[in-house]
Length: 204
Image 1 (cartoon, one colour):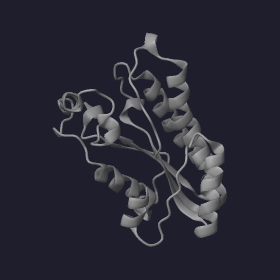
Image 2 (cartoon, one colour):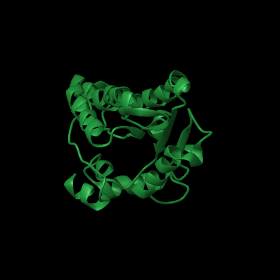
Image 3 (cartoon, helix red, strand yellow):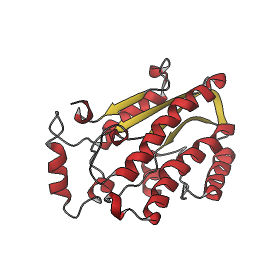
Image 4 (cartoon, one colour):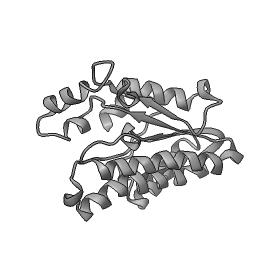
């Protein structure tokens, strides 16, 4: 985290916490208020995933993934609202798994379907403040989190690449550019939308 703050440069701050812990979120936004005063954009990006067959899903797995991906995301946004200026932008990180079935991935997929639903309802909830709410839905992206889903990351990624029309795994920078678009005035007439960035994987 310190390295990321240093790379971004002046004006950046880093606050370590757990989005499923509401006191950590309170601490985060207290620091934001002290140091920045307000928020123009919120990108709710924290998440976690794991594979399990339906008969092997544990309560611990369910609670952990819903705690971070759904509860954590909801309260990340809710607690940011007092600091957000009217006309701001919220971007939620979902996934193509919200609409496409992947074997043994039901818990994570359900959390991301909830995220997509949040964007639709919050678009109407926040229209009076002219705050736009949109979703970015990545496909397979080259991140440590994706590598951690399999004991053989290269074989796992090769299997995914076979289903991607563009023939490769996406780069995190490609997701970042999509988020910047949704957060900026370049998408000023876009709200409630789902921008899929997956190399075509979910489109065929």
